Each structure stands twice: as structure tokens, then as C-alpha cells.
Length: 428
Image 1: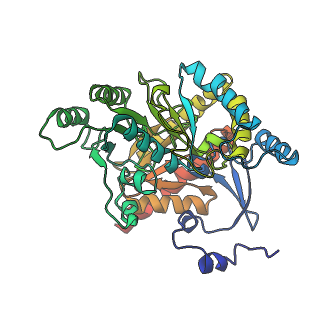
Image 2: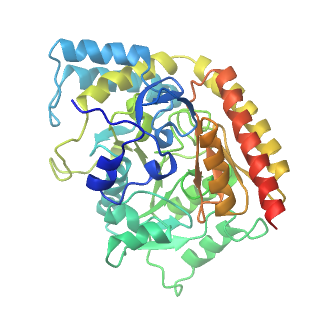
Image 3: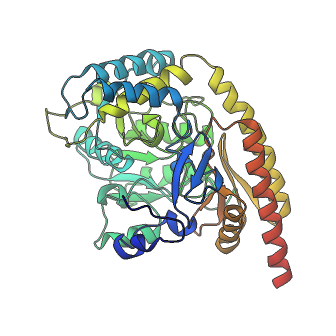
């Protein structure tokens, strides 16, 4: 077998599509990963503050998930079963019901969809239209919901939408909280637009939003605003879709990002860390009264990843059977918040964004944010940007990161920010 080294990446440029992106920021060949540490072909270690874009909330290669999966494979456990009944699926569903749904007073059905988040969003949009008989979906500025055409129509980013090659339709864009500044009540604007029979906005099938906008710049909607949207949805006979793909599975502090809010989402797209181990696995949670699909009316060859059922069950039982893990997240969130406010003080006009373990700093410039992340990488930290202009330095460290490692990574980030800010000042 030919081994590709850090010095020889020609196979990627020669053979891989130009669509590749993260590798352009992290120009090395990774060979292994454990916990919060990734190692490249030269043996250099990096602290991971990207975590598979929140697909690795429990870190790389959790030993208990890994062992359970090895045992399943070694015993000739089912690898692929379409949507047939399997013991692994039954075990996952039972654990999800016992540890996640019932303790939160939720009675949602679990719909297995294709393997990634955009599939869950597509299913949600499709089902909302089927349930209501309407076609219009209200989505929000800076929202990101996926790259397939329906989900892309609900995505705000101009660059990503430009890849569609055709008109994107079926969505009305409304301003997210804070989109026009703190002094503008966007909830009131939305209500007035929907109440006005001459606004030109068709009655929506659903409102689709992220409680915290991951790719959109870590905009975190308030409890009051999300509850207000929920009331508007009910008033207009629309479904409420809360996209918890990136903000869920503990990322904002609780399993679901909306747990401390008085809302009952009709549909909840989930993916990323749902599998626990980074395996492809997405699902749509559906309130029972909306589960009106006919058999195979929405299907897919990979609806439900049997290996992911194994690891997801272990993740739920290891981390969510009691509140110990949630308390750990709360402790680390406080450490992160302190560091982000310290970073913001380094840069004039910078602001802290997000909540929980989904936080970052808007440094006011995509170029500066990129330089901070590049310098961090040179010093052994993997971290990326988000936002309309990539102006937000975004921390998505694994939730299981040891405190000492977490502080070390934050120190690298703070030093990188201070260095790049001074260089920018000197250049001016």
C-alpha cells in the first residue's frame, strides 16, 4: 500500500474535486485521532477545536463506542438493513426513548432519513408541506440548512446558494433576531408581514430556524424570540421546525438546544453528533400527529446507519443517563465564555457570539479571522471561521475535551489573536 506523506499531497490536487474546502485551511495529512487530539503523517499533534464541525461532540474514537462497534462487526452484526427491523435499531430506539424523549416529556416519532443533515431538513420541509397543504417555508437571514436544493433554498449564504445553478424557490426569507441591529424588533416585523393580507407572503407551511446559527455566525436567538416564533407558527397554522443539527447533542449545554424554552417543535432535524462517533446518521423527530407518510413515500437506501445505531446507543447511555455530563459542559462553557470575552478585548469592536460550547468572537473582518485561525493552526490548534463574511472565529471543541487541554487550546487561540491584531495595527 502506498503511504501518502505530508510532503506528497499530489494525489489530492490531481484526483480530488475542487469542491474540497477544509483541507485548504489545514494543509497536512492526518493519520489518526483520539479524544481531542489529531495527529498528522509527520507525527505532529493538533488540538481539535473543530470537532468535525460538531459531528464529534464526544471526541475522536471514544473507547466505549469503538469497543461496542468492534464487537458488533466481529459478531457479523447487521451492516446494512434498509429500514428492516434489527436488534441494533430496537436497542437504539429504546435507549433514545428512555434517556432522551421521556425525561423531556417528548413523544416524537423518529424518522430515519438519509445519512446527513440536509436529508433531515429536506424530509422536514417535505412533510410540513404535506401536512399543511401549503408550499411556502419561512426561513431566516444567515440560516444554513444544507446543500441539496430544498435545504439550499432555505440557506441564506450567497456563495453556497450560487452553486445551485438554478433558481431556488418555495422559501420566504425573514430577519433573524438581531439581523437589523439590537434596536430593531424583528419578531414584530415578521408578525406584521404575516398579518398583512397584502404583504404578498403566502401562508407558511412551516417556520424553519436554528436556535443558534452555526455557519451563519453563531447568532443565538433568545428564549423570548424563539417562543414568539412558536406562537406565530401556531397562530398561522404552520409547523415549527427547529434545526438542531449543529446546536444539538449537548453543544449548547443541553441535549436539545431549546430545552429551557417553552416550545414544542413539530419537527426536529438531527444529524452530526447523533451517531456519537462521527458516523453518518441523521433523523427527523416528528410529533405523532404529523407522521402522515404513506409507506415508502419518503425513503432512501441509507435511511438509518446500523453501525451508528450501535455507537449512538452507547453515547446516549454513557453521557445522558444522568446529568453529570451536562454539568461538565456547564463548567467548560464558563471557561470558554471567559476566554472569548478576553479575546474580544484584544480586538477593537469585537463581540462575543453564541452560547454554551458553541461560542466565538466576531472580529469584524474575514481576513483577520482567517489569519487568527491560520496562526492557531501553525501553533497546533485546528479552528475555523463562520459568518456571512467569515468574520467569526468559532470554537467547536469536543465536549469531552479535558480541561487542561481545553485551556491549552484557548491559550493558543488568544495568543494567535493578539499576534495577528498587532500585525494588522502595524500594517495600518
